[in-house]
Length: 161
Image 1 (cartoon, helix red, strand yellow):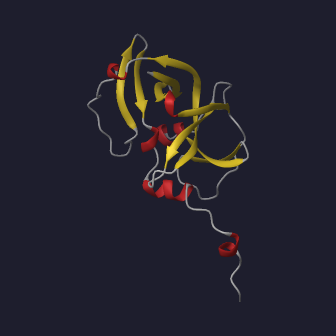
Image 2: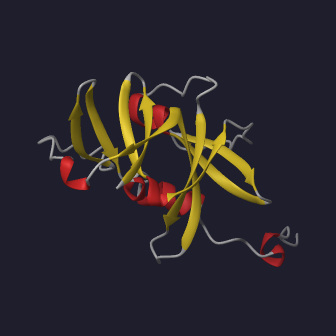
Image 3: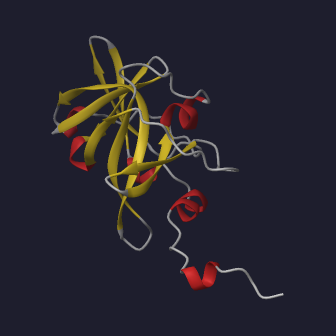
């Protein structure tokens, strides 16, 4: 199985590469006023707006550093109805692939309710690598905010006075 390796702070994590659509350089984002923690903004992906989540801010309370290796990982994301959407994940050092059997990852024994996206771990000569499940990154509230249905122009028109 192929994984995309990246860092949050000084720790290493992976995503299932089959969920990755494309890895982009860090782009300028349109900020979303009053966005929840971790929501970095919107970017233009091939003519369509895609929300981006800063994984470092979400996981370790520090925005990703703007390095040459900081990337936006565009992943397939399904809403509660199973509709396929796109989500950008900002991560540092997202430049390497890792081929391992999924059975090489083992349960860490630690379950954090605040971080349901953290999966099993793999130990190698450099330390621990943890699997991130992108489908569990967003709370239901944040998912609904980012992927609410488009408002029709008629519904968005100002109300008569």
